[in-house]
Image 1 (tube, rainbow, N blue to C red):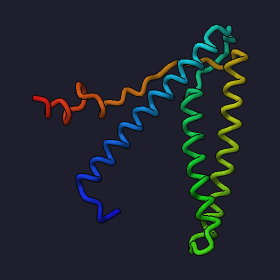
Image 2: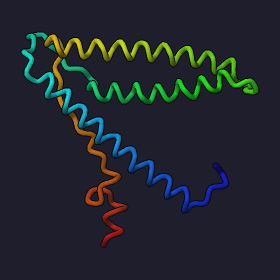
Image 3: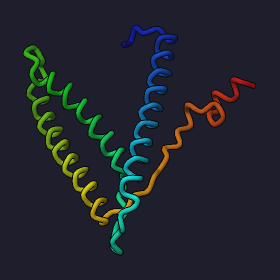
Length: 141
């Protein structure tokens, strides 16, 4: 919104940052649960490491679901001049959801079968930490 007051924009940005940190914490907690579930399974010698953890893949799936929801609304809106292009974009998003869902299912099956190994990674977000973000710790001096 171009008419938004700077103070309101800052308040909203801080709220978004806090929610993103909360989301990161939830994803990392879910990954810990997945790690515990699969850590006792013997790994095959050729077991490989996935580039993304199960919980971060599910997080991507949830973001994709939001995109699909909003794109579908635009594709079905009667007065939307971009409806035809939104329908094409919706098809792509739906295909991405199918692929990502299948990849998550495969990852979980591979972890269960010992074909994949899992490591826990922390995001190490610094912008919300008053000890690591210079803007925040310089403010306190």
